[in-house]
Amino acid sequence: MRALPSLTLLATALLAGCVSVNTQGDPARAGFGPPPNDSLNATVWYQLSTERDMIYAQTYRAAGRVLEQALADESWDALPRGDRAAATFEGVVHGLPRAIIVDVDETVLDNSAHQARMIRDGTEFSDESWDAWVQQRAAPALAGAVEFLDGAARHGVTVFYVSNREAAQAEATVANLRAAGFPIRSEAQFLGKGTQVPGCEGKASDKGCRRQLVGRTYRVLMQFGDQVGDFVDIASNTREGRRQAMAPYADWVGERWWVLPNPVYGSWEPALFGNDWSQGAAERRAAKEAALEDLRP
Ligand SMILES: [Mg+2]
Image (cartoon, rainbow, N blue to C red; front, side):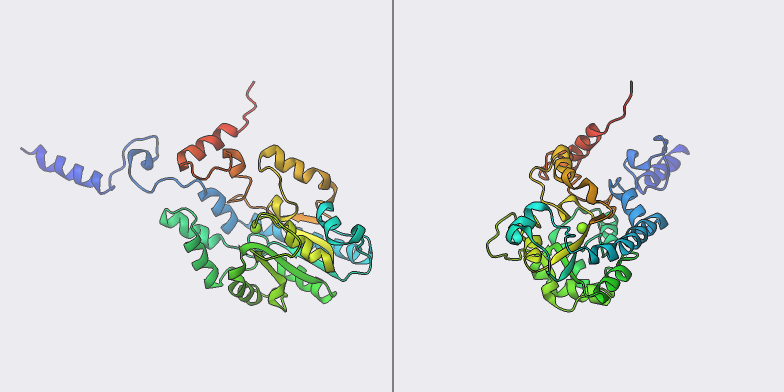
């Protein structure tokens, strides 16, 4: 009879998750504690590492050093050739006023707080939670971005914020950008998803038509983004398709095109599971693990 109370106590403690069980050090394997989240490490790096700030600062400072050259060279243009050919007669850019195109999320604004909420809540991305975050207008600037873009604006360069935030989120996004210190005089400098571009048709999330819209009246000195699609449209979102889209512009990286790191999310991820988000999380994870190359002999 003496054993009974201790067994009851042990069972109660186990159910409450108070007693660790030897499961190779991972309480989640025993059904206790929070389930693992695939984006935890990437989000921790993105939000909390000094290295991230160093990469952003390094990128924007380096771009600042190239800017003088881009301003002075009347033939310098950062639009992909297809977009430029469609934007101006014979692709001529001489005499046009100058612009820079930046993506918004994880290029100039840091949304890792939204990612942190999803991890803590155990949820996946939803339009509702994203919109609530956007409406909060609280995303901080990423290192070096304000200084660089402000400097460019003082040289008479117009900054266009070409983003896949919805066009309907323009007001909140512009308010957030202004509060963070970015140069944006007019809401017309924000070109969100759903922006209508006369004479150009494409998928709403592709940025080609919006790049062309800017290119019709501006010479584009530089583009900044954290996704291949921020620079050039991708015909087929596979690893090979993504490489092919970038390949003609390899020499532009670090001169006309400036890439920022995003290990948390992006089109690089669904490229590994056939762009099929209807699959369960376990299937998507299995496809990503299968795609890894370990180079074992
Ligand atoms: Mg982005």
